[in-house]
Length: 141
Image 1 (cartoon, rainbow, N blue to C red):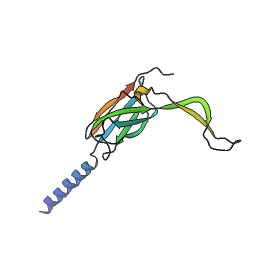
Image 2: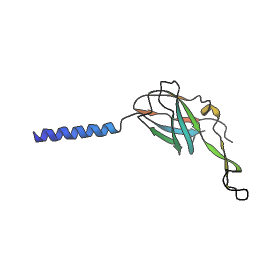
Image 3: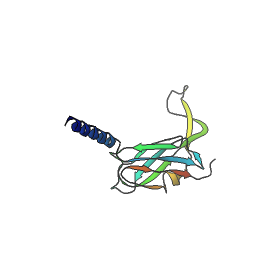
Image 4: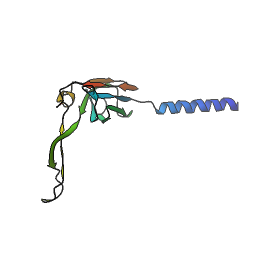
């Protein structure tokens, strides 16, 4: 009797631990012209109002993971990817006074609008694990 009870407890604990890792997740790799995108933002925007919330995360060294089983719902999402680089200019960030202005790099979005503001990228997310990987092709400057 004690042996059976102990087995049931171990099986129950195992099932609970396995359940802790369940939920909706999406991960993937993003590259530009074949090279991993070093640093960027990726957003998932529901295509219909019945989808989940708009969610995003950071792309680092070409990879990202978004695990939010509470707000990431099954449905179709528009994918928006944004990355910035220095224009080579310095601009005032509004801090400091007239003689001691705080100057910072002027950052410009360099990913074309067809991958962010007017994104053509879509993904159908289902319950469980999902993958979205994309090599963005555009002339880099």
